[in-house]
Length: 413
Image 1 (cartoon, helix red, strand yellow):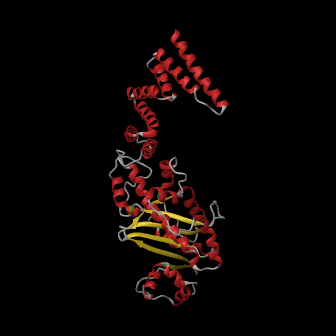
Image 2 (cartoon, rainbow, N blue to C red):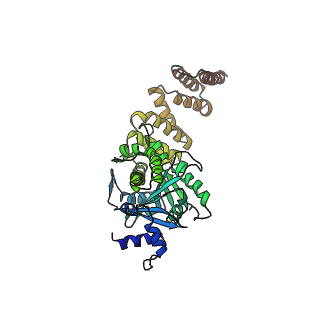
């Protein structure tokens, strides 16, 4: 890019129009920035506000860019499918467009909360007509938070929905904390919806993966492998080195790390949406199908959950059948529930189905002979299992004895 073109790009961040001349003072300020050319080589420009500056880095990717297994353009199809789905879910982008989603991540000087932890990099990616826009806002020193947040908040004032990875618990609370300290000098924080994909990763893969750190999820679920990546735990140390010696080469790897984080959030949202919207479970592993059903049940979409439970096979089949029976019970389809409980009672050592049958025959059918049969069957199965906590074991034993004695008394009347 020519020198004139670069200056025009910087004018956008200095609130200057295309036809306006750069004031001499601003020209001097720009050229007083250390290592300015290196920043330009990183696609970054200084944003001046109140005689201080932060760096704004912008980058574009085509919609057809492949990031691991997925192409960014698949986000359009995912949002369209959510808009065509009748049910509700915490990750549903119904009534939104792809450009309404802001995929957001931060880099901080520490992992703790509170005012002692400073955000030195705010980054987000957004789906636009021209492609995927990556925008990063970098804090060159402790006195530059006002220009950093000014630039960021001006760009996201129309924000409708944030997509993060642990952003509800960490990233956005940190933004709010730092914003509180300078709120009189910068725009207000926008109101928005929030999808935190860490919750979904835990639901789908916690039992299948050693860790659901984003880097692990990228490699095992998204097919994306980082090359020469700067580990997140090194970012604070590199930033402190930069503050002492403001050479952007020190921080270039951290910028790249953050960029890949926010791009991976796009493909992770695509992946999770595909799992949740696979209504027939054709493309889910048995574990994913079971976890998807559990999530749909948890948000009140019981019919959809039941459909997935019915199709679950493998090591989760028993748990899926138990969950399905409870849905039938809740919906009043007691005959279907009894059929499942009887099958589980005969084929497994799981006492819970026997307890449900004992409760049904005692309280609903008033068939005390069958109620006693299943109560005793449940107790035998429970008794054959080893337990560690003796106090809990005794408490459970007393509950079984109380049930058995109560049914025996009813049967003898």
